Image 1 (tube, helix red, strand yellow):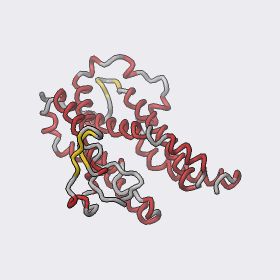
Image 2 (cartoon, helix red, strand yellow):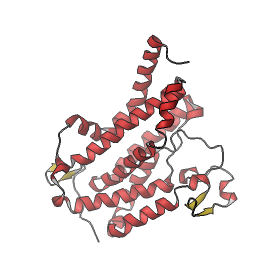
Image 3 (cartoon, one colour):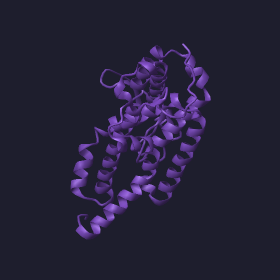
Image 4 (cartoon, helix red, strand yellow):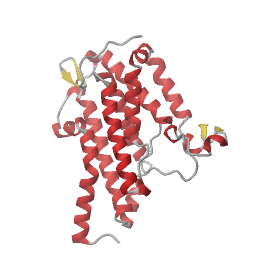
Length: 265
């Protein structure tokens, strides 16, 4: 099955934009901002109530991360140049690594969500013709299986936890040279860690969902184009800018609030 190419770089369907995707991305971004506020309250300002809020959301944030990655994959089907987008995003990701490693060595980001998404975009863009020839009805479940099978690779094994677990050879865990793939030894630390395994396969699964959306765009229900909350759609269309700016703004506001209210230790 081959898919027709989309000339537009936006999430457009015929002459309409698929605002539903923008809205989901906007909601995911708002939650991410909230989660980062709890992180800063917990570990930058060292408040007990911040720690309580952070740990209460620790198991929920995984769904937010998954949403971002899935939507990034979906967007690949609507981009004119995934290579250009991926290259630009990778440069930003590496800048995050350099800045955090220099100023916050104990809280550096070595392979976070931006590294993962940029790598996925570059990989998809480089082999787009090949990916488009593979049937989505096969690739979506295959990506889901590989994602599930490799989900615990950073814990030192692949398989289904509690059902069957295949532990990695000790030689692979002797150092952190393979950390982009999720293969790490004890003590590795990256504040935002989203390795290629398993997350690349969630990204690729999203790419195939995007190809199906593009293929059947005339049959999408009307709510996919509705725009009742333009501000939310705007946020969803500019997630990268918000992602880059939100932490400095959050920290400035929290430090100012702490100066007047004295709620940190």
